[in-house]
Image 1 (cartoon, rainbow, N blue to C red):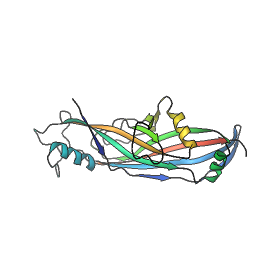
Image 2 (cartoon, rainbow, N blue to C red):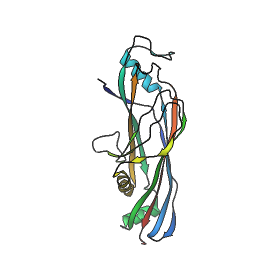
Image 3 (tube, rainbow, N blue to C red):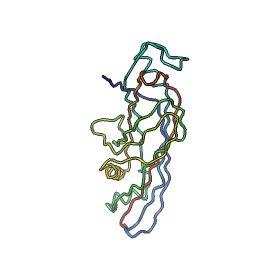
Image 4 (spheres, helix red, strand yellow):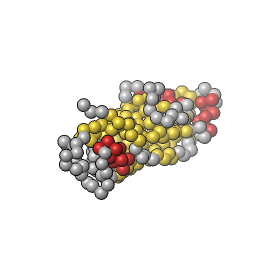
Length: 217
């Protein structure tokens, strides 16, 4: 029977946020927010460290788990929170404070892997939202969608697969101007399938495209 071991993987995020412009539209005033981009990276070393702890051996300098040492275990990989803060966008905030926001349109959430030398598959990644101070996924976190699988060594580009209400949940969070993205997946190490010691790095980005529609002040 597989057991789960929570591990913290060394993943870094950075956020790129620019200003916005005003455009006329049939629904009122359209405030376009430039794409919000979140860069992330994953290094296999943290997984190797946890694997060594479980096996009770050192894997340093080895490319394969030694013959006779077997494991079949799923490791829960948690991505540290990525905060989103649009509160500095004064053009947008004044419409929210005045109750003039008609809606938020999420055009897309793209997930792009730009480099990948990992020698193991990454299954679908679940993406959650929570308050901007959230330190991890809890029962109060809201699942909004899942990514595609990321096969070992492959570059994957696509859009987030929203849950039934995931796009609306994201729109609701956007009205608060600040929140956090969180994510998790599971990586299974099964020596009956592969004895490779986890190795490599992955780098990618999540891009959020959206705009607000507001009534004139």
